[in-house]
Image (cartoon, rainbow, N blue to C red):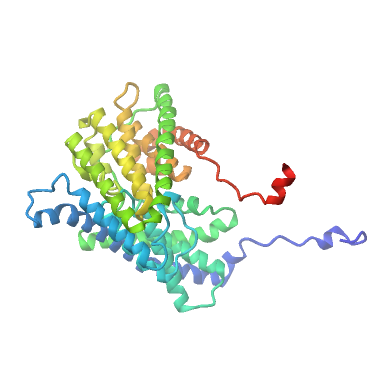
Length: 451
């Protein structure tokens, strides 16, 4: 700027962040999100129904068809090993990487290509149906965004990158709309994962919420029509929670620290094994599956409980775990946490799926275990364990608090202060325990200069 040029003349007015919201094209974008919400949520419902049927088929029906009376204790070993073999073949020979790598955390980094979707679906169905300790949320996010972007590009190829991003986000919202029990929870999850903020948050959030609301209605309608239910996260046997006292706030700190230690250990195990698994993918995923099955067998033999408590995501096992909590001894709960955590870390190294539900289950079991000690109620321990373990694994504090409290219904409002403390402690502790990623190597010339 020259000396005689006034400062006011050079200043340009800031762009209006709500100009898009007032435009006619934004209304078309909302209509597009509403339309896409119907088939995407229906496809997500079908995916969850298929996974649920496969779990029952492979773990219960198949042993009976082969002449066994019930499911043999050793059954998980070959079951998950075969699943690992098939997942390894899928990752190696189908386009793409069959979705994001769960050991690297939950990710929404762009919609996958249409050609990658078959590999994502197949690897996820095989992983979850065979009993890998992962959840369905990450594949659903990828499937929803990939399907939405592919459908829109078929209709119109010359779309702006921002429009494609919003459409992909709306597809993800629709796919996970009812999975966590509420469209709002799914919205918070996706907002924190994607790091949305500022004016752009509203631009993406409104179409996403519309698609999620429609998707939730589709889930409810299909659940009633088919008689299969909604596959949404829900608890029916929530114990009463008393008002928090000083002792429980102390336990919130202890639970937060314990969850940070366990969560960081699981993440490091997954990342450590991931590099080794990728060197010999097919063989390593088969071995990983056999080890997961062996951990389930060890738990069943050591506790007398079902091996399925170690297998699978833990979504459908949360309510039975809470209902039967008084009957679990401290030794059984400890063995369950150890076996489930190890199976979780191993599953993240080569299988495909999401990290949310296994972290909730491990945290719930930990909270129940701590409730055996004086000064901590079952309801408070259960909620704090879920919140602390979720944030240790996901690094999403708002979502972790909401998951733990909304899941508890009206009792969640009572324990929310405790959950917040445990989540904050676990978040800070796990961040400090996680090594800082190494930066790019310093050029040789700069190294010599520093020397």
